Image 1: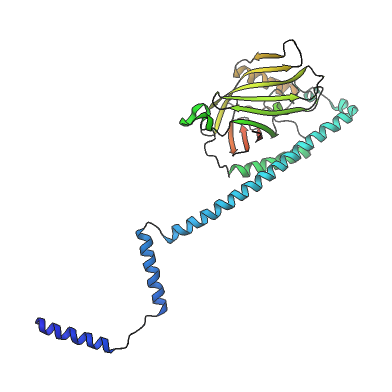
Image 2: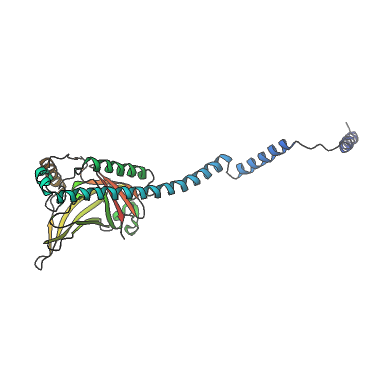
Length: 316
């Protein structure tokens, strides 16, 4: 057809359509069209409804996890306090009933030279009540482990990972809240009650285990165990016990430093000591060390290679 014929046909089509009443699209079609336009725009910008949903759910989960972790931390501290109170109650009962203490006392009930329950890395002997409280503490620890906010707690330890030691989250002074390790459990004895804490220096690579006794008449005021730490991974540290410093209430030799033998010899002596006391020996082919389970600004939890747990709170 010629252009003229096309013009006639087009003009006629236009007039016929203009003469018709305007038809409105159903609201459902309008909604679908609007949704399609929105999806197209989101797709161009790299978004999707699925990603929006996932982001919203992740933000809600993040807030919920934070609240759950805080509640679980508070519950763990309560359980640690309950364990400690029950343990001291048991010790007080033994002191108030010396006749029963003497009748039941055996070589495995005697404390070690520095008043610890054992020289070896073994689990402390527990009554049925204490065992139940221990299991409750471990249950809370395992729950917090899944919410650990610090993926690389050893970052900065002696420059590990290229990080500055001053930024290492382990730095500071920590108070012991709970442990089932016999060599870190101190009952009240002739030197009085024991105050235990730990000082950590990430730059020098030292863990300094500190124990102070309350009895001012005792010649031994306390002692410090210097332990060298080596980062094995993002959450594991190997320990090498280097020396013990005795703090004495004396004008002569107020401090006595005793170098310690190699790790292999100490482990062997520890196993012999544990067997002599009749307790369970927690042997590990990895030697001394621990895995950090949970670390934040004020709470630190680790499990030793021998399977013993420590919960500590930051003092400063």
